[in-house]
Amino acid sequence: MEKNVGDTDRKIRMALGTILVALGAAGYAGVIPIANVAPQALTSVALTVVGIVLLVTGYTSKCALYSALRIDTSE
Image (tube, rainbow, N blue to C red):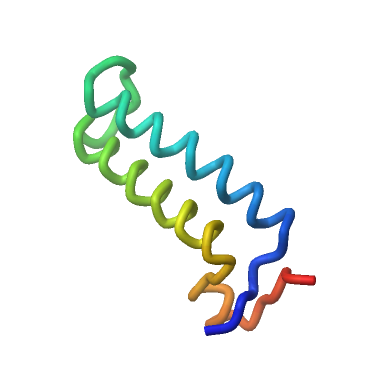
């Protein structure tokens, strides 16, 4: 798979991924309440997984969803 995530997109993914992983961990530990509809643990794990996906796609500059949709933000 070729790189299809540009520099600005990569920075946004890395920042948002870090925030989501931190929120997920804090929610799972019970430090902050983050769930209203779904159980706290489920919401925390979901946030963490989405955050990790964003971190990995930002780190590698490769996004499978972008490939499927034929989107390329790289310069």
